[in-house]
Length: 200
Image: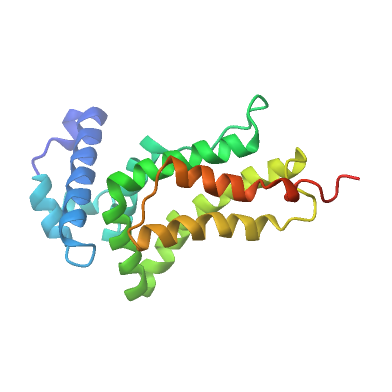
């Protein structure tokens, strides 16, 4: 282990982690999740396998961390901005998500496929990737309900499922995910007839 991890300090360590994550995404895009091994990632990144195991317990942890980092560059949880309607915030968030999927849609589809074949990975994928993104939309819709932008009797969890169901289905079928689609989803969720209930 002569990679200078201790002597170089944190900047070198962070650089190595970035190289490993980039190599991971490249290989998963090219080969699919199941066909990529820790040894292959280490070789692509030019590091020893132990360097990977020093940072990540499993391949799943490494792949998801790499995907999370990419996701963070494109989409972050909408702020509770009083100057923007919740509908506007949802549309902007979806546009950001779709920009990420345009770049990494193949990777995400590979992870979804792997999740259907590997029970352990499915649990990790759902816990670390799917659930947090569902919570972002659910929280936004709860704020919308508090602001009376959605009726008080609307089922927020079901509406959140509708949002994710729409774009996951489109992703898996190779449909276009763009600003128009984001606008259509937001329009449907914030239809005028959803606002009137419970405002008496």
